[in-house]
Length: 316
Image 1 (cartoon, helix red, strand yellow):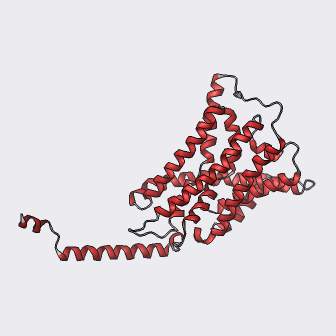
Image 2 (cartoon, rainbow, N blue to C red):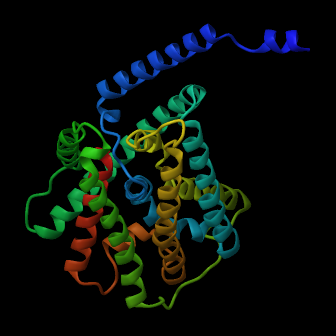
Image 3 (cartoon, rainbow, N blue to C red):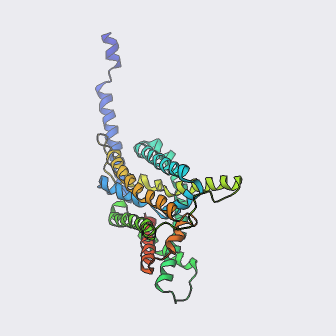
């Protein structure tokens, strides 16, 4: 038995060699982290994770939630909203857990890049439209300018912002975007509450055919899922946090994610429910652009804050 235990016990030379290899690997990894701009500064805290994730998730998609509710109805609509919140939170937790594993790189990054391309296209167009709307509100007598030019203006500005080294270098920008996201969501449902329920509101399905109802159902699910997008930069957010084998970065990252998702619920649920209750006939984004009886300055402020949030999100 003693001989067997001695045979199984690793020799001191083997242990020393293993430790040397581990030290060399750690030094090599630290050198790579210091060389990459996105991981050069690992000083972020859990609250940085919170407002970075709020900025990443809450976007223009929130204004389509009441319209999605009109295609689903009260019961299925509420179920879809809550389930999307739970499922995306769970999938984000999985990404945070996989951040420390090499296999996670190969599983997450390809999907991350696909989402990134789609999100960039959407925000380019939405940012250009918001900028155009703001221009038309401020200068109604000015000559009309094509949407293409506003998209180019928007792209030029956030191209400059995107050159910032890492998330730590844009913490202030991200915090401002999170505040703006909460602000325009509040303006959206607050203005509707002030106006009150419209007299001709109906809560039936928009389509009167089975095929149309089915297509509307899946379209609404797509709208809700799009509103919960933002996982495409989770890995980059976590990369700014200090991480050791004893204290991995997933701890503070998950704490920030939970706080962020509470704020996201405060942004999304009032807009979806109040918007559907008051004006189901049109998309909420159209209602926010031309809210009945609203003051022009409020519409202008909403468009400006929405533009600011979209621009800041895009630079991430």
